[in-house]
Amino acid sequence: MSTIKDRFVKHIQLLQTTICEALEHVDGEASFITDHWQRPGGGGGVTRVIADGKVFEKGGVNIAVVNGPLSAQAAQQLKVQGQSFFAAGLSLVIHPCSPKVPTVHANWRYFELYDEKGNTTDAWFGGGTDLTPYYLVESDVVHFHQTQKKCCDGFDGGLYAAFKHQCDNYFSNHHRGEERRGVGGIFFDHCRAEAGRDMGFWFDFVTANGNSFLEAYLPIVRKHVDESFTPKEKYWQEIRRGRYVEFNLLHDRGTLFGIRTQGRTESILMSLPPTVRFDYDFQAEAGSEEEKLLKVLREPQEWIA
Amino acid sequence: MSTIKDRFVKHIQLLQTTICEALEHVDGEASFITDHWQRPGGGGGVTRVIADGKVFEKGGVNIAVVNGPLSAQAAQQLKVQGQSFFAAGLSLVIHPCSPKVPTVHANWRYFELYDEKGNTTDAWFGGGTDLTPYYLVESDVVHFHQTQKKCCDGFDGGLYAAFKHQCDNYFSNHHRGEERRGVGGIFFDHCRAEAGRDMGFWFDFVTANGNSFLEAYLPIVRKHVDESFTPKEKYWQEIRRGRYVEFNLLHDRGTLFGIRTQGRTESILMSLPPTVRFDYDFQAEAGSEEEKLLKVLREPQEWIA
Image (cartoon, rainbow over all chains, first blue to last red; front, side, top):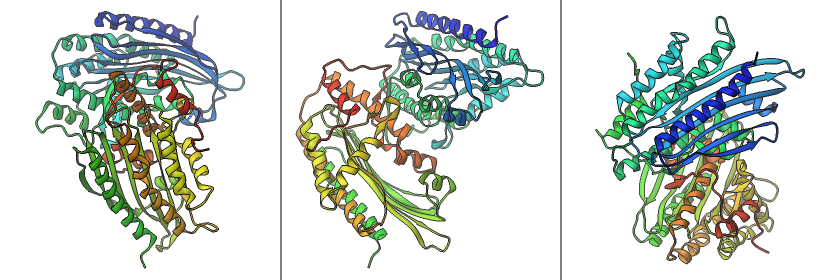
């Protein structure tokens, strides 16, 4: 019988293909390019990037399956101990052309740690998916959260509420008075075997969450893709993309872990938006649609009654 | 007789006005706006920003004069000890519209630390100025470095070489194989009273370096401001501005110190360029002018024989 490690690697390989094909189909023009890379210390990855599409301005759907000795720096940053490690994950960020179509991010990952004899001493899953709209359409946000909740509820009635709040807390620009990057979704980490939930439970949950991604995101894309937008709305999207850059480079643990542990820079930074603006002290007009979005970024809502 | 603290505050106030007036004169269209701000813990600053000019697309020339209890976090980050602190500095970043005109950054700062009785226990200066061109014009770089060297040599024949190398080491995107942000200049920190160099020595040096800024930068602006440029050259400028963002948000100690100690976000992040591109795996063409620049960013040169 195959291990969780092997099954998870097969899952992310298949999921990468499934998601890329579905996004290409929606885009209708652009295709993903494929870069295979090797990690000097062990393992490697497959980076798939789409650019300058009809629908998607820039997007990456990457997998990495890496292993090797655990550096002191990596151990300190992960707050774990071990002689060597295995990590596998899929990370995606999709930046649409239109400010009417939200950006989306998702990540699902699995870690194992080993002692000097090669015995597994720790293992955990992490991940989640979150939505970053430029204009607030409440029914979109409800649909996105409802899909997350449906997935979570299939496993445990308490998961959605816990992971939804962790998501709101995590994707926050602390240096901007806790302004959130987007309208959230779910975020979970350090999901280890515990009473009533073995690693098989978490494997099933994480893979189910990955498999629900297209159902959560694509209907929102299809709904807005043909809407027109003004240069002013594009400008606002680029200002908000600036906040996305600030979060990813200042606060995102995954990005900083990758950078500090000499990960493959181009694969890590594929998450950065294609065109971005940084204006001094940009202010949304009072009563505008832009301000309406800011309000829910500053005070996260419960989207599902 | 006034203290070094008082004299340095007067110096940066005057220098801010002098530099803003000179840049407005060169721009000919845009003016600096002025934002006064107070720091809740003590002190405040004056942020001056120019935007959408004929020559300058975005620029900030900021001063801050702050004081108060030294938090454990700030002490740890500065690697110092003390009960309370005083800090004053001028920071500027100028992003021209044209890719033919280099971006410039400068900072001059003074710190004092006090024990619980208010006695000064430590004091030091830091700062420097560095140039970030998008196209390499060697005579510009030589002029910029020559101005720094002339200033340094007026104080000590060894300063320029030491501070030039510190600059090359500091403004480096470590996650891109030590690709430098620009062609350097000088960078110095922890300049304390020591044998033969009292604080008056460093005060004179730091103020002289500030006063030489316009002489270092303006001739380069004037030389290139009327040159035409292509959309492809503007594109390259925006790609390089992406690297500027990466350095400032991932590595710059001043930015990270400000963000982590709850500084005024808009004043700290005025350094970010106005429009920016992040392409996946952008490659300069072999033999191109873009590649010529990259070469000296990857292998810093000695510009003065």
